[in-house]
Structures are given as structure tokens and as C-alpha cells.
Image 1 (tube, rainbow, N blue to C red):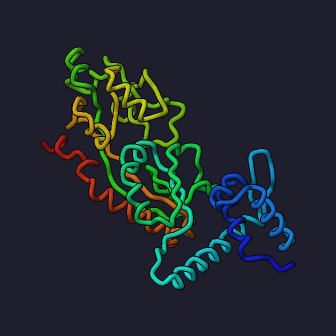
Image 2: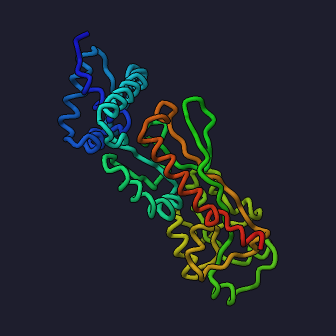
Length: 304
């Protein structure tokens, strides 16, 4: 084995996490040719093939998989060393990619995350709100906001918040259509919801939970599109209270009877959970969610 440059490990980790030379190059503020050259040099120095190259990108080999954890440990120690020597400079540096559900990302976090970025100017932040195409297991993201907490030893998970969902319609729609006095009356109304065969997590399958046989006839994979459909008076839609409460024209239907609860969880790989950039973002999100508990729970609709 030839001697290798420790600096090459950051190129190895960037490619391992993204699977793409171009994505790794953007993270490292360089070009894909440099990333490719560094990976080739590291493989030659280790006399081992770390990635399989194919048209979809770079996939870790067995050897590469085994080396990721050690490389991340070296990355953390290097970060600690740099922070201790920085004489008060911000310890939160590097890149963090956060994958989140569209509703939480676009209707809650998007308004607040810029403040976190201002607090940590040395941190590069990537917010992904198309969660179904991003895999935490393949390290395509550093952390995710999900509706489930994976019970696996290699994941670290923390509860962010509980939130409530209700069936909503516009005031004008409800005045012009048949009254809804019990759940079964929903069958006479047009429902708006997710495309059934594209629901990627059981927590988004609302209609079966509300009433057997209830299904959406106006379907979209985007909660943003669903919100606009209900605002246009197309029909009724299940929405989180923190989203719907921003629109006074939306009225909850049978709020005391039809109230769904879900939990947001923050999930990351256990070996990243103590990294300064990850810890700072988790703490920020939990604090913001805690401050917005009334928005998430909509207690007045149920208790009042």
C-alpha cells in the first residue's frame, strides 16, 4: 500500500454520500475532474477499488462501504481539531443536506431555515423537499424529517413534533354543497388527496383511516397542489392545521370527530448524530417546532 493524502478522504466521503461526481464537486467547491482524479489517486494508494462506476453514478464497493465509517470518524476528529484551533470561530462548518416532507419543508421550515443560515454563515445548507427520491440509507442526505422512526441500530432518531390534520373546505364550497353532519356524508363530496399508488409512506394514507371506501378523485403527489385545489373550491382536502390556518377561508369539517395525528421525526445515521453541523440543525428545528406547538396541534378546534 502506498501512502495516501488524508485530504483525499473528503473527496471519498463526498462521492460516497452523493453518488455523483458533479454533486460531490458542488459540495467541495471544485470541479468533477478534480474529484475523479482524487478518487483515482486514493484507490491507487490503497490498492483497492472503492466505487463501481456505472451510468447512474458511483456506487460503493464492499471495501468502500467498510471504509465510510472510519473516514467519517477521521472527518469528525479533523473538525474538532480545527474548531479547537479556531479561537472562537463558529464550530458549525461543512455541508448538511436535509431531506424533508414537502409540507413541513415548504410550509414551515422554509420560512425559518434562512435564520439558521444567518447564524451559521460557514455552513452550506441543502434543503430537499422531494423526499421520496432521496434515500438516507444510500447517504443521499445527511438527515431527514419523516413520519416514522426507523428502529435500526445504525439510525439516530429524535421526535420533532406531533401535529394534527383535519378535513377542510372553503366556506363558499360548504355553503353551496350538501351539509356534512357525519363521516358518511363525505362520500357525497369530491375529495382531494395524494395519488394512491404513489403514496410512499403509510402516514400519508388519510382517507382509509377516516372512512372505508373514501377516496380522492382529484389527486396530486404535491400537498401544495392539493392546497390550491381546495382553495379553488374543487372539493374537500385533509390538511395539516399549521398549513390550513394561514387561510381564513378554509373551514374544518367535523373537527371534533375527524382529527388525525401524526409525528415528525428527525432521522440521521448514528455516526453523524454528534457532528456539530447535524446537532446544530436538529436543535434548531426542535426549538422552532416547540415554539409553534399551537399551530401544529390546533387545540381550539378539538377542545373548543
